[in-house]
Length: 167
Image (cartoon, rainbow, N blue to C red; front, side, top):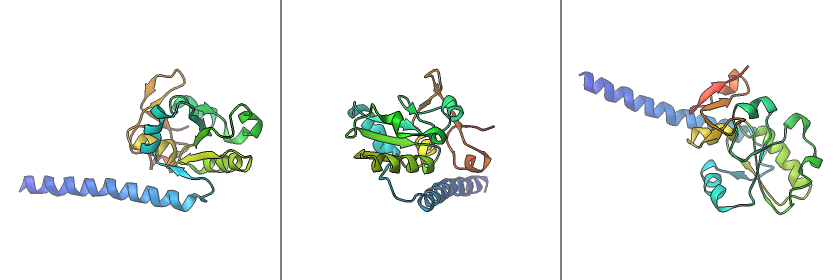
């Protein structure tokens, strides 16, 4: 009888994780305006090793970036963003923008596309999507970390893999 109970609990837990991921993806699709093509975390992970000219732009705040970011990402704060900050980036470069969940980065990605950048992608799910898939992040000292800044308590519910940090 106890074994049967444990099996039922395990099945329910698996369904909750699947349900959570489904709801997260549904929420993102409602938030995105589809102005920038999306790139899935799995595809970006494969590209990181194969595309030496790949540019990663973190569009979050300096505080969020300091907690953790994708290795090699350059910080371009959303609130202070202007196109002069990307003058040194070729308009033909492969550019992936990301933020917490992909909303702010989509806005910056759209501005880059309007300015003539031809290969701009928004990371689906942002750093949450990346970390939830089990991919690594680093802190400001470039040391791997499990911490992820969750922007606020509301958004924190969507981070399933990592240590939640918020003010």
